[in-house]
Length: 351
Image 1: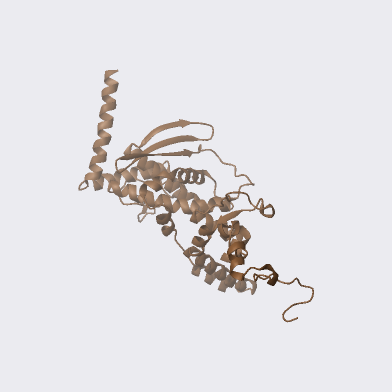
Image 2: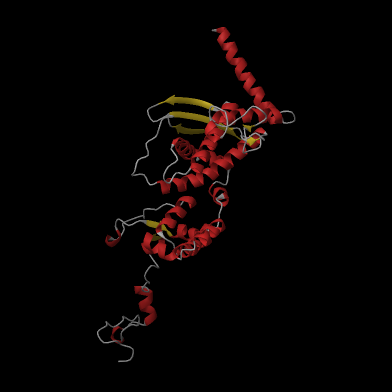
Protein backbone atom coordinates (compact mmCIF):
# COMPACT_ATOMS: atom_id res chain seq x y z
CA UNK A 1 0.00 0.00 0.00
CA UNK A 2 3.05 2.29 0.05
CA UNK A 3 2.62 5.30 2.33
CA UNK A 4 -1.09 4.68 2.87
CA UNK A 5 -2.22 4.39 6.52
CA UNK A 6 -5.04 2.03 7.39
CA UNK A 7 -8.22 3.85 8.36
CA UNK A 8 -7.16 7.20 6.87
CA UNK A 9 -8.83 8.61 3.76
CA UNK A 10 -6.86 8.61 0.55
CA UNK A 11 -5.58 12.06 -0.44
CA UNK A 12 -7.06 13.57 -3.56
CA UNK A 13 -4.65 14.01 -6.43
CA UNK A 14 -4.62 16.91 -8.84
CA UNK A 15 -3.75 14.48 -11.61
CA UNK A 16 -6.49 13.81 -14.10
CA UNK A 17 -7.99 10.35 -14.31
CA UNK A 18 -7.12 8.21 -17.33
CA UNK A 19 -10.71 7.90 -18.44
CA UNK A 20 -11.40 11.65 -18.21
CA UNK A 21 -9.67 12.52 -21.45
CA UNK A 22 -8.14 15.63 -19.82
CA UNK A 23 -4.48 16.30 -19.19
CA UNK A 24 -3.14 17.44 -15.83
CA UNK A 25 -2.33 21.00 -16.94
CA UNK A 26 -5.74 21.37 -18.56
CA UNK A 27 -7.43 20.29 -15.32
CA UNK A 28 -5.41 22.81 -13.26
CA UNK A 29 -6.25 25.60 -15.73
CA UNK A 30 -9.98 24.83 -15.56
CA UNK A 31 -10.49 23.79 -11.95
CA UNK A 32 -7.73 25.84 -10.32
CA UNK A 33 -5.22 24.79 -7.72
CA UNK A 34 -6.43 23.75 -4.29
CA UNK A 35 -5.54 26.59 -1.90
CA UNK A 36 -3.86 25.84 1.41
CA UNK A 37 -5.44 26.82 4.70
CA UNK A 38 -4.91 30.47 5.88
CA UNK A 39 -3.58 31.44 2.42
CA UNK A 40 -6.67 32.94 0.80
CA UNK A 41 -9.94 34.66 1.60
CA UNK A 42 -10.78 35.95 5.08
CA UNK A 43 -8.04 33.95 6.82
CA UNK A 44 -5.34 35.57 4.69
CA UNK A 45 -6.41 39.15 5.52
CA UNK A 46 -7.77 38.98 9.08
CA UNK A 47 -6.43 36.99 12.01
CA UNK A 48 -8.20 36.06 15.21
CA UNK A 49 -6.85 37.19 18.57
CA UNK A 50 -5.79 33.70 19.68
CA UNK A 51 -3.72 33.24 16.52
CA UNK A 52 -2.14 36.67 17.02
CA UNK A 53 -1.09 35.76 20.57
CA UNK A 54 0.53 32.55 19.31
CA UNK A 55 2.27 34.45 16.51
CA UNK A 56 3.66 37.18 18.78
CA UNK A 57 4.27 34.83 21.74
CA UNK A 58 3.04 37.26 24.39
CA UNK A 59 0.33 37.20 27.02
CA UNK A 60 -3.10 38.77 26.59
CA UNK A 61 -2.28 41.52 29.11
CA UNK A 62 0.86 42.57 27.23
CA UNK A 63 -0.97 42.35 23.90
CA UNK A 64 -3.70 44.73 25.05
CA UNK A 65 -1.09 47.13 26.38
CA UNK A 66 0.90 46.99 23.14
CA UNK A 67 -2.23 47.62 21.03
CA UNK A 68 -3.14 50.70 23.10
CA UNK A 69 0.34 52.18 22.86
CA UNK A 70 0.69 51.37 19.17
CA UNK A 71 -2.82 52.53 18.26
CA UNK A 72 -3.96 49.17 16.83
CA UNK A 73 -7.63 48.25 17.22
CA UNK A 74 -9.77 45.30 16.05
CA UNK A 75 -11.34 45.51 12.61
CA UNK A 76 -14.56 44.12 11.27
CA UNK A 77 -14.01 41.97 8.15
CA UNK A 78 -15.69 43.07 4.95
CA UNK A 79 -18.41 40.75 3.74
CA UNK A 80 -19.84 37.80 5.62
CA UNK A 81 -17.76 36.05 8.23
CA UNK A 82 -17.95 32.23 8.36
CA UNK A 83 -20.49 30.73 10.71
CA UNK A 84 -17.84 29.16 12.89
CA UNK A 85 -16.08 32.54 13.30
CA UNK A 86 -18.97 34.81 14.19
CA UNK A 87 -18.40 36.89 17.30
CA UNK A 88 -14.60 36.63 17.10
CA UNK A 89 -12.23 39.58 17.34
CA UNK A 90 -10.21 40.05 14.14
CA UNK A 91 -7.02 42.03 13.49
CA UNK A 92 -5.68 42.99 10.09
CA UNK A 93 -2.59 41.13 8.93
CA UNK A 94 -0.74 44.44 8.31
CA UNK A 95 -1.35 45.56 11.90
CA UNK A 96 -0.02 42.24 13.19
CA UNK A 97 3.12 42.58 11.08
CA UNK A 98 3.65 46.11 12.45
CA UNK A 99 3.31 44.79 16.00
CA UNK A 100 5.80 41.99 15.36
CA UNK A 101 8.50 44.56 14.47
CA UNK A 102 7.77 46.88 17.41
CA UNK A 103 10.81 47.46 19.72
CA UNK A 104 8.50 47.50 22.75
CA UNK A 105 7.78 43.82 22.17
CA UNK A 106 11.40 42.96 23.00
CA UNK A 107 11.22 45.17 26.10
CA UNK A 108 8.12 43.32 27.32
CA UNK A 109 9.93 40.00 26.89
CA UNK A 110 12.99 41.32 28.72
CA UNK A 111 10.80 42.50 31.59
CA UNK A 112 9.08 39.10 31.76
CA UNK A 113 12.45 37.36 32.01
CA UNK A 114 13.56 39.87 34.64
CA UNK A 115 10.46 39.24 36.79
CA UNK A 116 11.16 35.49 36.65
CA UNK A 117 14.56 36.12 38.22
CA UNK A 118 13.06 38.34 40.92
CA UNK A 119 10.36 35.77 41.77
CA UNK A 120 12.95 32.99 41.88
CA UNK A 121 14.99 34.95 44.41
CA UNK A 122 11.89 35.77 46.45
CA UNK A 123 10.75 32.12 46.50
CA UNK A 124 14.19 31.09 47.73
CA UNK A 125 13.77 33.56 50.60
CA UNK A 126 16.62 35.66 49.21
CA UNK A 127 14.94 38.99 49.87
CA UNK A 128 18.15 41.01 49.76
CA UNK A 129 18.95 39.62 46.32
CA UNK A 130 15.42 40.44 45.09
CA UNK A 131 15.73 44.03 46.37
CA UNK A 132 19.12 44.38 44.67
CA UNK A 133 17.63 43.37 41.33
CA UNK A 134 14.72 45.82 41.44
CA UNK A 135 16.70 48.89 40.23
CA UNK A 136 18.02 46.77 37.32
CA UNK A 137 14.58 46.44 35.71
CA UNK A 138 14.56 47.20 31.95
CA UNK A 139 13.12 50.59 30.99
CA UNK A 140 11.65 51.97 27.77
CA UNK A 141 10.38 55.21 26.28
CA UNK A 142 7.42 56.03 24.03
CA UNK A 143 9.04 58.86 22.09
CA UNK A 144 9.25 56.88 18.86
CA UNK A 145 5.55 56.00 19.07
CA UNK A 146 4.54 59.66 19.38
CA UNK A 147 6.65 60.61 16.35
CA UNK A 148 5.28 57.64 14.42
CA UNK A 149 1.59 58.23 15.17
CA UNK A 150 1.76 62.03 14.84
CA UNK A 151 4.21 63.01 12.07
CA UNK A 152 2.94 66.62 12.12
CA UNK A 153 2.34 68.93 15.05
CA UNK A 154 -1.16 69.73 13.84
CA UNK A 155 -2.04 66.02 14.04
CA UNK A 156 -1.00 65.95 17.69
CA UNK A 157 -3.08 69.05 18.47
CA UNK A 158 -6.12 67.54 16.77
CA UNK A 159 -5.91 64.41 18.93
CA UNK A 160 -5.31 66.27 22.20
CA UNK A 161 -8.93 66.21 23.43
CA UNK A 162 -8.85 62.71 24.94
CA UNK A 163 -5.39 63.29 26.41
CA UNK A 164 -6.46 66.44 28.28
CA UNK A 165 -9.69 64.83 29.54
CA UNK A 166 -7.82 61.83 30.95
CA UNK A 167 -5.04 63.95 32.47
CA UNK A 168 -7.54 66.22 34.23
CA UNK A 169 -9.42 63.17 35.49
CA UNK A 170 -6.29 61.61 37.03
CA UNK A 171 -5.38 64.97 38.56
CA UNK A 172 -8.62 64.85 40.62
CA UNK A 173 -8.50 61.17 41.63
CA UNK A 174 -7.15 60.15 45.04
CA UNK A 175 -3.85 58.27 45.26
CA UNK A 176 -5.00 54.80 46.28
CA UNK A 177 -4.93 51.31 44.85
CA UNK A 178 -3.40 51.16 41.38
CA UNK A 179 -3.28 54.96 41.14
CA UNK A 180 0.05 55.92 42.67
CA UNK A 181 1.12 59.27 44.03
CA UNK A 182 3.52 59.82 41.12
CA UNK A 183 0.68 59.42 38.62
CA UNK A 184 -1.51 61.95 40.42
CA UNK A 185 1.27 64.53 40.76
CA UNK A 186 2.34 64.11 37.15
CA UNK A 187 -1.25 64.61 35.99
CA UNK A 188 -1.56 67.74 38.14
CA UNK A 189 1.64 69.21 36.71
CA UNK A 190 0.60 68.50 33.09
CA UNK A 191 -2.88 69.96 33.60
CA UNK A 192 -1.42 73.02 35.33
CA UNK A 193 1.19 73.57 32.59
CA UNK A 194 -1.51 73.41 29.91
CA UNK A 195 -3.78 75.75 31.86
CA UNK A 196 -0.95 78.24 32.42
CA UNK A 197 -0.16 78.32 28.69
CA UNK A 198 -3.80 78.86 27.73
CA UNK A 199 -4.15 81.60 30.36
CA UNK A 200 -1.02 83.52 29.38
CA UNK A 201 -1.65 83.35 25.62
CA UNK A 202 -5.40 83.99 25.90
CA UNK A 203 -6.27 80.87 23.89
CA UNK A 204 -9.50 80.00 25.72
CA UNK A 205 -12.54 80.96 23.64
CA UNK A 206 -15.50 79.12 25.19
CA UNK A 207 -16.38 77.50 28.53
CA UNK A 208 -19.45 76.44 30.45
CA UNK A 209 -20.18 74.56 33.65
CA UNK A 210 -22.21 71.35 33.74
CA UNK A 211 -22.82 68.48 36.14
CA UNK A 212 -19.84 66.52 34.80
CA UNK A 213 -17.41 69.41 35.12
CA UNK A 214 -16.18 72.50 33.32
CA UNK A 215 -16.13 72.25 29.53
CA UNK A 216 -13.39 74.40 28.00
CA UNK A 217 -12.46 75.14 24.39
CA UNK A 218 -9.21 76.74 23.30
CA UNK A 219 -7.81 77.66 19.89
CA UNK A 220 -4.12 76.95 19.35
CA UNK A 221 -2.48 78.74 16.44
CA UNK A 222 -0.34 76.52 14.20
CA UNK A 223 1.09 77.99 10.97
CA UNK A 224 -1.65 80.59 10.76
CA UNK A 225 -4.44 78.09 11.37
CA UNK A 226 -6.53 77.98 14.56
CA UNK A 227 -6.93 74.38 15.78
CA UNK A 228 -9.74 73.96 18.36
CA UNK A 229 -9.00 71.82 21.43
CA UNK A 230 -11.81 70.85 23.84
CA UNK A 231 -11.57 69.12 27.20
CA UNK A 232 -13.47 68.61 30.46
CA UNK A 233 -12.05 69.51 33.88
CA UNK A 234 -13.89 67.68 36.71
CA UNK A 235 -15.15 69.63 39.70
CA UNK A 236 -12.74 69.85 42.61
CA UNK A 237 -14.72 67.55 44.89
CA UNK A 238 -13.84 64.36 46.73
CA UNK A 239 -13.98 61.59 44.13
CA UNK A 240 -15.33 58.12 44.87
CA UNK A 241 -13.41 55.53 42.84
CA UNK A 242 -15.81 52.82 41.52
CA UNK A 243 -14.85 49.17 41.76
CA UNK A 244 -15.85 48.10 38.25
CA UNK A 245 -13.31 50.32 36.44
CA UNK A 246 -10.26 48.63 34.91
CA UNK A 247 -7.53 51.10 35.86
CA UNK A 248 -4.87 49.03 34.10
CA UNK A 249 -6.27 50.10 30.73
CA UNK A 250 -6.65 53.72 31.87
CA UNK A 251 -3.08 53.82 33.19
CA UNK A 252 -1.81 52.49 29.85
CA UNK A 253 -3.63 55.30 28.05
CA UNK A 254 -2.24 57.79 30.59
CA UNK A 255 1.28 56.50 29.96
CA UNK A 256 0.99 57.35 26.27
CA UNK A 257 -0.92 60.62 26.73
CA UNK A 258 1.68 61.79 29.25
CA UNK A 259 4.41 61.51 26.62
CA UNK A 260 2.20 63.10 23.95
CA UNK A 261 1.28 66.07 26.14
CA UNK A 262 4.91 66.58 27.16
CA UNK A 263 5.90 66.79 23.47
CA UNK A 264 3.12 69.29 22.73
CA UNK A 265 3.91 71.50 25.74
CA UNK A 266 7.62 71.47 24.88
CA UNK A 267 6.80 72.78 21.40
CA UNK A 268 4.29 75.38 22.60
CA UNK A 269 6.54 76.70 25.37
CA UNK A 270 9.45 76.75 22.95
CA UNK A 271 7.48 79.03 20.63
CA UNK A 272 7.11 81.44 23.56
CA UNK A 273 10.82 81.31 24.23
CA UNK A 274 10.38 79.48 27.55
CA UNK A 275 12.13 76.28 28.49
CA UNK A 276 9.84 73.37 29.41
CA UNK A 277 9.36 71.87 31.99
CA UNK A 278 9.04 74.94 34.14
CA UNK A 279 11.25 75.15 37.27
CA UNK A 280 8.25 75.42 39.61
CA UNK A 281 10.13 74.09 42.66
CA UNK A 282 13.73 74.88 43.56
CA UNK A 283 14.59 74.03 47.17
CA UNK A 284 16.87 76.42 48.98
CA UNK A 285 18.92 75.72 52.09
CA UNK A 286 15.97 76.08 54.43
CA UNK A 287 13.95 73.49 52.51
CA UNK A 288 11.34 75.87 51.08
CA UNK A 289 10.29 75.72 47.41
CA UNK A 290 10.91 78.90 45.48
CA UNK A 291 11.32 80.14 41.90
CA UNK A 292 12.85 83.60 41.65
CA UNK A 293 11.25 84.39 45.02
CA UNK A 294 7.70 84.40 43.60
CA UNK A 295 6.42 81.00 42.31
CA UNK A 296 5.90 78.20 44.82
CA UNK A 297 4.20 74.85 44.75
CA UNK A 298 1.05 73.57 46.44
CA UNK A 299 1.41 72.80 50.18
CA UNK A 300 0.92 69.09 49.48
CA UNK A 301 4.00 69.24 47.26
CA UNK A 302 6.10 71.24 49.71
CA UNK A 303 5.28 74.83 48.75
CA UNK A 304 3.04 77.76 49.69
CA UNK A 305 0.97 78.40 46.55
CA UNK A 306 -2.79 77.97 46.62
CA UNK A 307 -2.76 75.50 43.67
CA UNK A 308 -0.44 73.82 41.20
CA UNK A 309 -1.95 75.96 38.44
CA UNK A 310 -1.03 79.14 40.34
CA UNK A 311 2.54 77.91 40.71
CA UNK A 312 2.85 77.14 37.00
CA UNK A 313 1.19 80.41 36.02
CA UNK A 314 3.53 82.52 38.14
CA UNK A 315 6.54 80.50 36.98
CA UNK A 316 5.55 81.05 33.34
CA UNK A 317 5.17 84.78 33.93
CA UNK A 318 8.62 84.89 35.52
CA UNK A 319 10.14 82.96 32.62
CA UNK A 320 8.47 85.25 30.09
CA UNK A 321 9.72 88.36 31.86
CA UNK A 322 13.26 86.99 31.91
CA UNK A 323 13.14 85.76 28.32
CA UNK A 324 11.53 88.92 26.93
CA UNK A 325 14.80 90.82 27.21
CA UNK A 326 16.07 89.28 23.98
CA UNK A 327 13.14 87.26 22.71
CA UNK A 328 10.84 88.69 20.06
CA UNK A 329 8.24 85.92 20.49
CA UNK A 330 7.67 86.71 24.16
CA UNK A 331 7.41 90.43 23.40
CA UNK A 332 4.83 89.71 20.69
CA UNK A 333 2.72 87.70 23.14
CA UNK A 334 2.88 90.49 25.72
CA UNK A 335 1.94 93.12 23.12
CA UNK A 336 -1.02 91.03 21.98
CA UNK A 337 -2.22 90.65 25.56
CA UNK A 338 -1.90 94.41 26.15
CA UNK A 339 -3.87 95.15 22.98
CA UNK A 340 -6.65 92.80 24.11
CA UNK A 341 -6.79 94.53 27.50
CA UNK A 342 -6.85 97.96 25.84
CA UNK A 343 -9.68 97.00 23.48
CA UNK A 344 -11.75 95.66 26.40
CA UNK A 345 -11.24 98.93 28.31
CA UNK A 346 -12.33 100.98 25.29
CA UNK A 347 -15.47 98.88 24.89
CA UNK A 348 -16.30 99.31 28.57
CA UNK A 349 -15.85 103.09 28.35
CA UNK A 350 -18.04 103.27 25.24
CA UNK A 351 -20.82 101.34 26.95
